[in-house]
Length: 519
Image 1 (cartoon, rainbow, N blue to C red):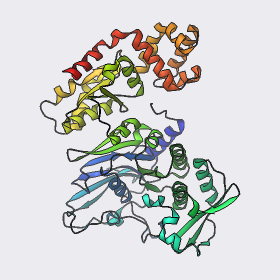
Image 2: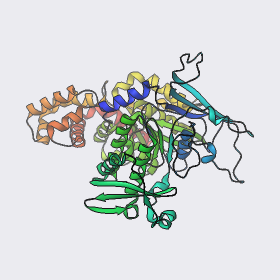
Image 3: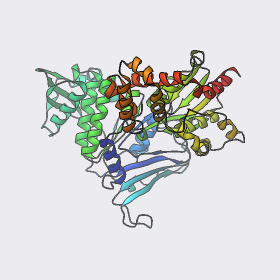
């Protein structure tokens, strides 16, 4: 299902792109050399929350560490209780054992939107998106950390989900934790965690001893401490308390953001984080293995990180289902068919006979450009399993552009590349986006649809008009309102009807796929 971008999403994106007052990180990447398994790559950021998915060992945690090292801080900057310094250096994350290979020459680039750059020909006013680089020679040191833009940065690793009863320090200090003066944000934290978990916290505070703390809450008249909290509950109190104490315009970096939370809580969690991005101007960069986390973010906030032929490959705008299928490594089919979204997948599956459907995997990857990237990746991996691309009908006119995009992603394509790609380009019927084509063709099948959906032909005709007026990619969301059925059910009914009533429209597609399977 396509992500439905809200007005709040648009406001967040506009503010993130335009503001120079909060030192937002707009891009990071390895510009030269390799670093902890990461080859050259660039991670662009156009939204205040960025989620990076990928298999274990793909380099996600290394990317988070690079983000933490983008900024410096003054002596009065925020630091976590058990940290010595209010900023991070590469030594905080990249510790070398004697058996580890030495770090070769490398350069890390950052683009930061900032209002206090030293005036230069590129940024004469000192206000703009500027380049900041960290570099290291093969046997040298990193260049001066103190030259970095200053900003509060907090890294929250997976140790946050270790229950307090398993933490040796918490157990040792259980009898000596004491109250400290309230910070003023405790009520906000209690409301946020309560909203996510569906609980009514009437009181929340931290008790402290030395550098260690323990949450204590009152919920439904019962008072209990972190020793009696689940891992997710305790972690949420730590995350939100840290954000509020760290303050406005901070960068919050979270490893495996979904840990300890069930799927409904994950969705509520992302809603709360978006609200904090609006009110506190914070930026969040996280890793995840969760389909639900990705589904709560707009496409340009989702990335998939992997290694292909020894090189780092970052796929933007990835769909949650495709990211999950790549991590699950489901591989029992004969042919992989990439389509743009779940509407294209539903229509194609409806048009294919069972004898073909059982032998292929139809995967929605998010966009036409994402399809082009996946074909390039398959070419580079020299995969033995065949793959095809079935674009929406409106992409016929963009064939040259999609081929060029694939070629650019392949970096050093062979002489056979263009032919290899072109043989895999297929199209759904029509010359417009898939929802529009389905709506247009459904007008000729009102009787069939009326019987299937228990409505009159006139009602179905009106509903189709409402759907068309809803705008591009919103057709089936609007239909859901008028039919009283889930969007997926509406999509299945209309796709099946059109495919059944107009079988010849799909003859070319079926023939091409059958030829690949049986050739």
